[in-house]
Amino acid sequence: MSEHKATIDWKRETPDFAYQTYNRDHDWSFDAGVTVRASAAPAYLGSESCVDPEEAFVASLSSCHMLTFLAVAARRKYVVDAYHDEAVGVLEKDAGGRLAITRVTLMPQVSFSGEKTPGPEELRQLHDQAHHACFIANSVKTEIVVEPQ
Image (cartoon, rainbow, N blue to C red; front, side):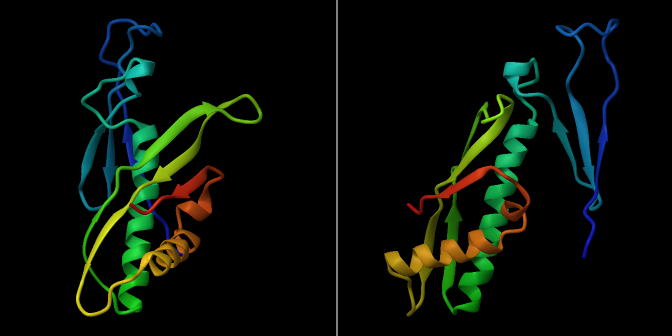
């Protein structure tokens, strides 16, 4: 077991606290000293220049899949040179009528080198193994679709 911590800090920066005008910008701080400026999504009156929780959710799923994929590939003696993903999350009402990110589609493009490179079926198996072992994917109810490019 391991613990993973984040500190979230927000302070009112407006004279009033009305829904339309209160500030949504805040900081996420992590144990390595990294601070990320975050806000609500622009559709919810947040700042476009900040990361919003929906984007961070999609990024964490993509990042975890990538890191797990790299581990699986390395253990199978493949040499990965580059990995690029343009992940997309869909925010909509779920079966219970509540807003949720119901689906995240990962579209990884992976470059390999060396004597051993996977064919399409082997690549699919690598992604399936990565998805099955991804900690974050195993922690959420969101449908996660992997479409290797």
